[in-house]
Image 1: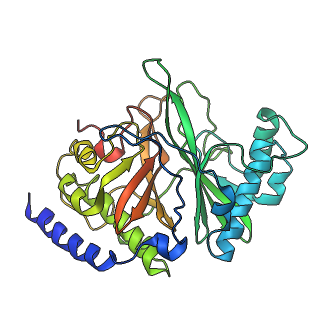
Image 2: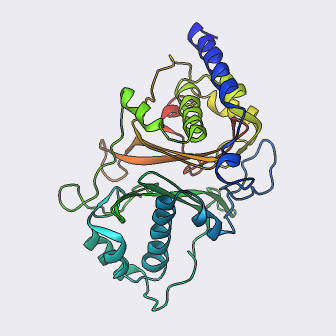
Length: 348
């Protein structure tokens, strides 16, 4: 182990000793997690992603403004996305709504055109969101909704699960900006930026990232700091030995490429060669959203354009962490089988 890694262990140990006396569940939700109970857990295997059964609980947690924002996002989803009621876009989306999904045009009118063409209209919207919701969390101007997503097994023998994320930014009670974990598919025609197309994903680099850790709630601030430090030490710097500090031994893994258990995480991140530990994240940070026992980290990552050889485009990469007792005990991300975070690509 190099000197920088040793120093990082000492600093991280001091940090976790200081913050490990309380849990965010106690502070924000009593004894209930904002995550659903995990499915059957087998060490050495990823755990299937499960849905939360109590949407009302997710919507009732939080400060008044955050509850209001969650309800707006939820009702928009019920009416527009599930029921195809395109007029709901006028109620919930700003006219200059900014779209970061790389496959869709930007603006409210574009949203209305898409859903009028592809979603059959229902005169009565369902009472609840019809998609399998993993959780809904809010902080500041942001709301993040996570959903179970299902993929065909590469060998064609059944399906497996991962997680899809949508993040909304609010201003004056309207949704003004949207990111999700969608990527461009091979053969798909996509609109161009500057010609009504999506706005490229742009994150924050350098010391300005540290401003994104702040929260008035000391526990949420420490949870965000924990995730931030875990990411720069382990996935980005390849110091998998630090998992003993940051992760609970039973670390429940929902990434379909990795194994449940802290030892599984070590093996997964051992694919990343050791590099110097930096003060901030290598990947630009789009958002860090925390509520209750959950933290969602959104990074700007580049991908090769599947339909334009030699070109790249930017995506929002989502990771979600559940914190318990001052350590990360559960993790979800947007990966499909065979897909690695940018920090680990090209190194295995």
